[in-house]
Length: 168
Image (tube, rainbow, N blue to C red):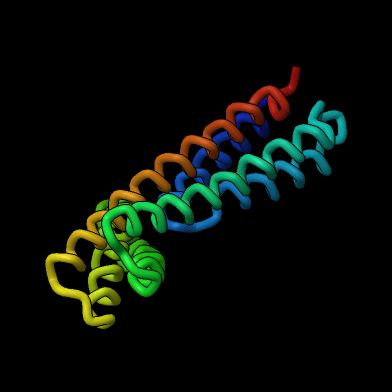
């Protein structure tokens, strides 16, 4: 019976992991769920080092996601305002895009939102269209790098969790 519960729990971790693509804190939710699993299954072999490691990975993932978008924008000539516009636009785009394509629209929405948000804020700051478009492209590319890094580190968290959750 414990194998069924563990299998369903691991499936839940994968589903929650996918919420990272909606700009939601999927890695953090998974950590909370793993702590609850540990509380319900005290014989789970995960100790403080395991939890410290996955918290560190989740923190690194958030930092990489945030910084990659800023660096992408800056590398292509973006301003502070444009970077904030990209961040806000990505969040709004992910939320607005979520209902489309079985939820996958959140990914496209976040990318488009980063581009449009950066473009809008750059233009409002008095930048020329060519400069604003270039900076917006950088913000969107940075968002892609951030998505990939956050998802990859989230998958590492799940991979580390499988032997801890699976009864053995």
